[in-house]
Image (cartoon, rainbow, N blue to C red; front, side):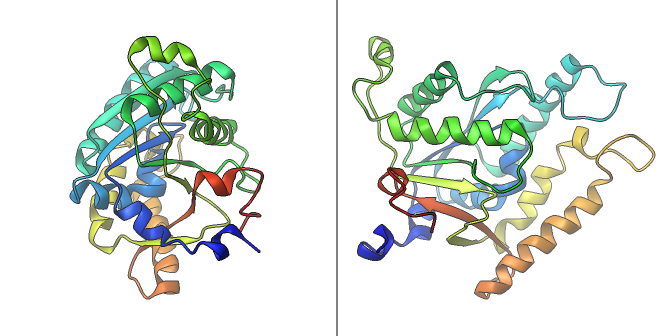
Length: 259
């Protein structure tokens, strides 16, 4: 017997009805890629969205002409432009070196502080349990964010925050992007164009065929739309994004049993 079977949950509604969302990503562009459609949809509904980025994005290139310092500066500006398109109002940066983020007590505490500052209904992050995920920042950011979501409501955790005027806050929902165990579909047909526009701002990640890089943006646009079409087809939607949506109760002692 699963918790979800004892207490059926409309998981899509938990997302769509959110008033505040804290999206914890590893790099500038992660959520534009994996959740740009729902981010734009939430913003249009009046949801207050904050992006918290754990790393500076300074290593995410194969172009030897770009220094880490220059790339970090460029990617911050790219994220600012993309966020404006999607309707994201606030950006927070932890500034850890790209490719070196670790889920330490310090990092977890910083995310807990952000939760207590922004007081979100929903915490979104990357699924740290995605099979074969080899980028350590994705895995470690997801872990640190999930741990923070579990502990942010406890009064004896990071008590130094209380001297700053903060109070414990328990998020009601955790939403994991790029999950192999997704349980929630969101129709993003009306916001797909905004997602593509936002992604197009990350020019440092989409270099031309004549340069060293990930390839032209047009290829990635085709991939992104094809993936969203595939998910949408499963539920009679034109375009969809999928997520693993859990309550904190389901994340404790594996009560969800990975369903």
